[in-house]
Length: 156
Image (cartoon, rainbow, N blue to C red; front, side, top):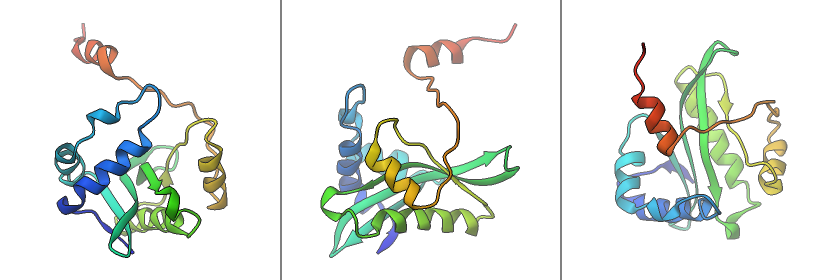
């Protein structure tokens, strides 16, 4: 079953978020039940879907509205997609992406956009099975000190 996450799901969602952010350069220690409840589940800008089987959270998707000028339409940006290793290859990931697409369409959107880490062959293979087109883009991230510096600069 795919359903919207509630504050009662914050601990399970935080654990899964820590699992997908447990790689060099990331900070899974920053992810807490309280921050997930407040900043993700409690934020109306976020779409947070949970996959539940036998009463246990086994996957999730997070997304938010996104306007793409190339499509000249609104859609959704799929930020995180995760299925617990023991629950993979059962259609859960596909159902989560489908639920994000359905939410986008319900709100007048016409696409779902996402990215995957280079070299993540499992994710890249999964995305290809959905029939998603590979977009030829390079992602950039402005964060930390450089974000603060640029955000603090004023126009001349």
